[in-house]
Image 1: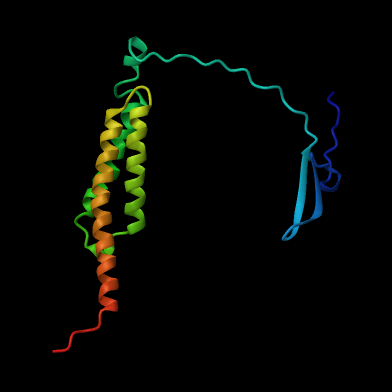
Image 2: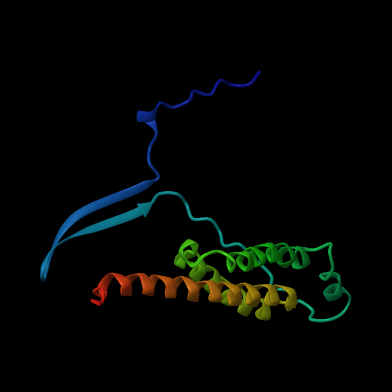
Length: 160
């Protein structure tokens, strides 16, 4: 027979944090001093080992091919790049500066990252450079359109 364990009510639960709040006068004004201490015992550190990853050999060759994420992630990302290529056919007023800028920055960051990781992923680098290039064109078109709109609003009409 198992013992019956009483569930505590909300007002019976004790906090594992001790928070102290005090008012401190400092040069230039008043500030709050918040002390937060935990009563939860500290856990021992996790012991980990670093392993050396081979840059060639049987294990390295096993990471390549259609069975692994190193192949499929950039392959599926080509759809995003091709969508950007489709956006080049849109009129300039429908392009988003924020979307194009974020895709250019993302493409540049991930292209750099693909050359740093082991194994170096050239498919990932290619798709990200293509995405940055295509969306860079869209960004240029969108910014040029925004500039023309502002210029047209500020320029007085010509008298004939």
